[in-house]
Amino acid sequence: MACGVPEALAPELFAYDRDDHRFVARQPKNAHEIDRMVGVMITSELGCIRYGGADPQIAKRLAQQGEGALCDIAAPKVSRVHRDHVAVVSVS
Image (tube, rainbow, N blue to C red; front, side):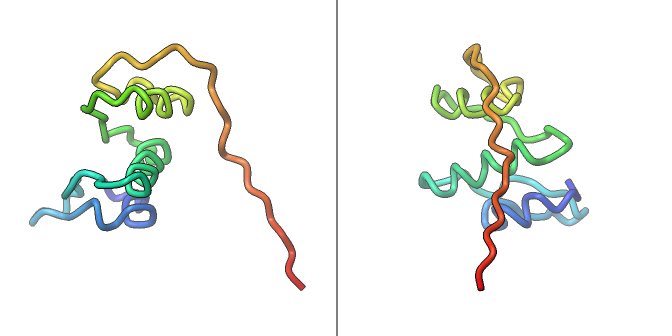
C-alpha cells in the first residue's frame, strides 16, 4: 500500500518490508488504536486490510461505513452512517 493513509492515521501499527510493501506490524491494543485502525480501513481506497476478529462492535462500525465486506465474520445489516462531515471553526 502506498496510498499514505496508514502513515497518516496509524503509523505505529504499520511497517514496510524490504520490497517497500506496507503491512500490519501489530494489532491495536486499546480503543484509541482500534479507532485509528478502523479509520485506515474505511479511508484506504484499496480495501486491502481485513478484520479477522470476532468483535461484533467493530464489524458493526465497518458495516455502518459501507465496509462490512472487510470483515471475516458476518457484518450486521445496518443503515450506513455518514461520518465524513467536517466542521471548520474560525478562531480570532
